[in-house]
Length: 366
Image (cartoon, rainbow, N blue to C red; front, side, top):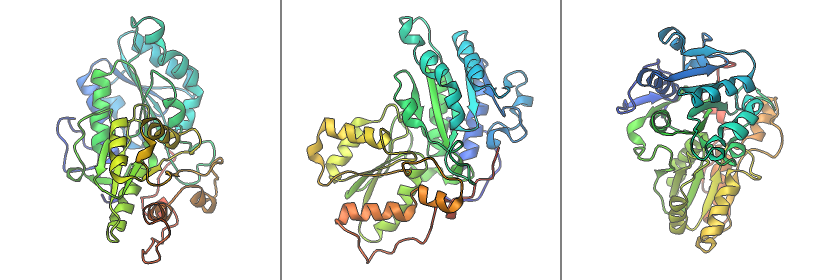
């Protein structure tokens, strides 16, 4: 993985190039959905903007006239239109340039999209995708940087995904459009858009909606989401030099985590760390702990360690924002203490103050 940007290039979900950026994968997935499925439409704020949702649908409104539709600032209404379209045979992809804006459509998503199949005995389904952008950037503050996956994953009937690699984007988005007759929410991290991945270095995605083992290890299990998967890979590469061997599970599907995969890994390592992009209380970390506690808590040789955002609204000032989000040093320190039982002064810790010290800074706002 490196930080150099690349140009947009569409691909087929059946063939992955050796190197691909997160943004390219999103753009390829959107173009493929429109190309292969005539009933697919893209609807949302910024759909026809020249920056095209951070470059992921740029120009598609000209390439597919009438099927990429701009909306005013009316998220509730736009999502309602998408639900109606889905009920009438279309496959809408509803774009929100901030996950926070999805809160304005929560009645449509929770009370309508998620429940239609159940309320009408399976006679109606709502196949649609909702794209939500999450994560820190340049002082987005309390109302534009929330990571709300746990809120939506709490609702039966919603599939919630957090892709961490181009392959997981391409495979899972294609599967959603072609095969899943229900609403799928995908949360995409803004700091990852310009990252270029060596796709051959990642295990193949065999279950588009499943969890994935990104690294095999024996000392500790790290269950991570979104960009925290990449942070876990960085931490594990550094700690391997000191004899600490991490196993990393990319949770990917927040709503449908692979319980068997988690328990098999924890039974092997005896130690568990959960690294999420959101708050810890009532969240992904709590759910993973519930899985272990209900399945077999006796496999744990030490208390579970969790890592996420500070329990407060996100500050706007960068100095405070750096404290708000865990950095690589925080993650490595937590792993060392979990595996070794205490800090190890022999292990050199990174000097980074925040993720943005390593990842390419976000170039927003749109």
